[in-house]
Image 1 (tube, rainbow, N blue to C red):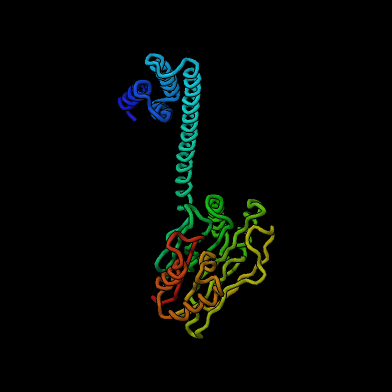
Image 2 (tube, rainbow, N blue to C red):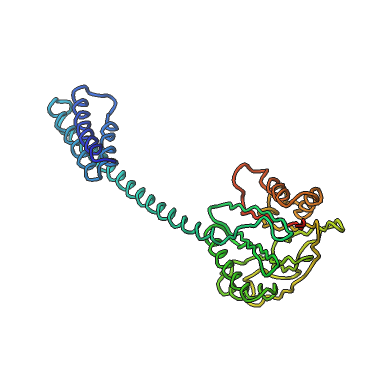
Length: 351
């Protein structure tokens, strides 16, 4: 607010307090007009300062006292008591408004700092996610990523390892900032592990070893990693939502699960083995997080319903599959999804 406007409000509030006192004494308002005095006092406190608001409160009380004595509106004792009571009301009002302004200023400064920190966190979080390619050799690729809040705990990484395509998907327990920070840590561990090995069992064990000492006891990470070869897919599943693999040759769907394997971060030693499955022309791979399986349309028998989508769209491309599943996931809500969502589909379609 400019100095000129503050000056106008300061003068206006002071004159208003005096004018109300004069009008009250001359006209003799009924009922009591104490509430009218509070208007310039509040305006002075809010738009000028607490000190000036107290000054206007004192002025209002003096105006009431002087004008009532001048025009004989009340007896001396009762007038003194009324003015004293009104002065206390005026002063308390100014003090309360001043206190409220201080608290609002603190809240605003906190929100500005939080917004700044959140913006930095979002930039760091966004840098975690690699661009999803549309193709890799004869593989067609599609995905959808939506966070329920500003930040989320769902994670994916995709990239080349030699001539093979590496893909992983994970879900960090919790939401928002804490989960996002651990997704950044998970990303760094996966990148470092890929620099040392392309063996999925060794990779996941390395990640678990580094993550275990960092996560709190109440947190864990479900993780699925796979490598697409020329005619096969190698995979490990550490407690993640089970991806689906549709085979066009047999018209069947395989659930890619590693039995009795704990998520990342629960035990210091993770017992897990790499498994393989054919991935031939026309086959479709589908991975997702629990934002899909816990949604209204999939909550009841989620894998069976997702399998129905694949069976009903065997000739569709991965982009269509992702779109259909996402629409079914959020169709019951017009607002943002309740949980983070990642959907990824990969189909071998030929060069």
